[in-house]
Image (cartoon, rainbow, N blue to C red; front, top):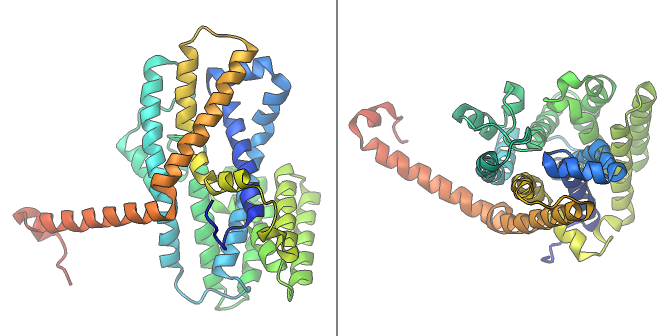
Length: 369
């Protein structure tokens, strides 16, 4: 791992563990391999099936924590328009995300040829792909083309909502207080109604706890923000106990005290965890195509035992991390993402220039200024 002063080992470790739990949840949920694992090892894999998904709360809290650091490090309102920031966030998420969707479509086509299973997404349509590209697939009711892609859309919504709240807060109310008010509404009302789970407001309670943890870790504001955060979260749990919210509160407290004590930038000093945390988004994106192909190969073998199931799961996990490593290097890393974005921009500009030379099309395009 490169020596980057902005890296936070504690956050990398949390992301690494959360990514592995999400993987194990999906490896316990989709395909014949998951069915075999739950049959041979019911206690372990039923636990992953039931509780592994809660690791998403770790990502939500961390995302809120880092959003507060980037948008309002000292609890100040956002003084610039949020739109360029939202667009930048969209590009950061969508470039690797669309590449992973392409891999998922290819893997699904291969799996569909050799295996019959409900885990295989139906053949993608253009409208379905377009809904995914605009991160509106959940809101528009389209079937997902890959496991977990709902989270990318929610992450984008949460960041956009956070930026807009911090910008709107400069008019009438202190910006962080406005964020906390919306987080409180989420914890007490929206998060208790699963009908909102395609909208950011459903998850904003956990995201807001992460933001509050950043502000609470400031020496000048720690006692006030910590008191407010604990009061709101505990009251919400008293009204309706949800294990996912209790986990979010625990992660928020860990991050807040970690920053306050200095552990955030110092512990744990374990390179494998740091590396896995760094590529965790790539792991999240590419593991489902790998899982589809692993299930396809598994169904073509005659091995049917607890040992062979463990071997296949181990190989699938290792392959997911290996593919994610390559994916991060070539597509997700900041350098690769900038290169891909620049290439897309060059193609767009040159395509537009060619189109202007076509008599009929050129008259329909706006004039250059």
